[in-house]
Image 1 (tube, one colour):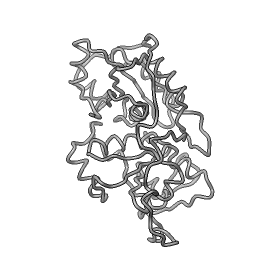
Image 2: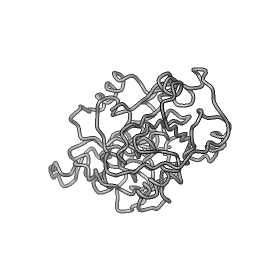
Image 3: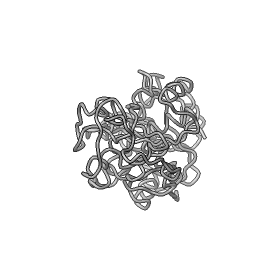
Image 4: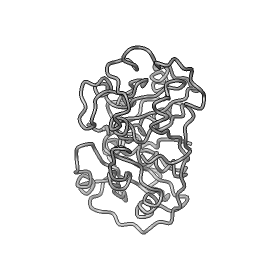
Length: 311
């Protein structure tokens, strides 16, 4: 299934009256003005999705800053957005889909197949000269029934072992990976064994995803092939979803660590590595034990309760 829809494709779809639920997921770490920006101008008919309250549960150290909400809460929110069974849904934001990807991943995980990211988001819509509308959009309550576990995810325990036989990507900025700075989580650095792969490098200066070939070459340079067992984390499970979308576009399947570094770094039993290398001392595992394939098999297709733009 496709990951993206282009601005011309969406505009044409709306022009001919094909039912489409538009989700405006404007959110940036450290800012609270997403709703105000939405009210000032959004795609016609788009409803606002508040990421911290609708796409996450309350922060808990043992689960991270943006734990996944319960299925019941998420389904109630989706119905409030007017989503019915069988609807086509398009999510966008004004930051290269960094936040919108969270809604995309969660809806995919819930079994919604016809859900897309608007490539380039609001900026691309504006650049095309298409109209915006202001104010709140009211919509009828939908009837969608959501499921769970349709996208792979891993636990904190699995993240600790992932690099034994898979590739664990860190989607945060390089300086956070290296431990040079950490704006919000309790410790600086990265999960031992993780490879730095900032998801901001998956998009063009215009905020659109890079072409398939460029994305594939980028991930190949990180020693990924299409048979690789890949998992992704970020600060709190938001922008890692964006990297998973980029990987999907390039032909890879990847699991999400929902709690991400905010969960990992809050557990004092977990080691944290700093510097450019996956492991500080260059040695993957002190015990020298070979990996077992089960160590890199995502536990889900099960809910794991568990960005700058990145989170």
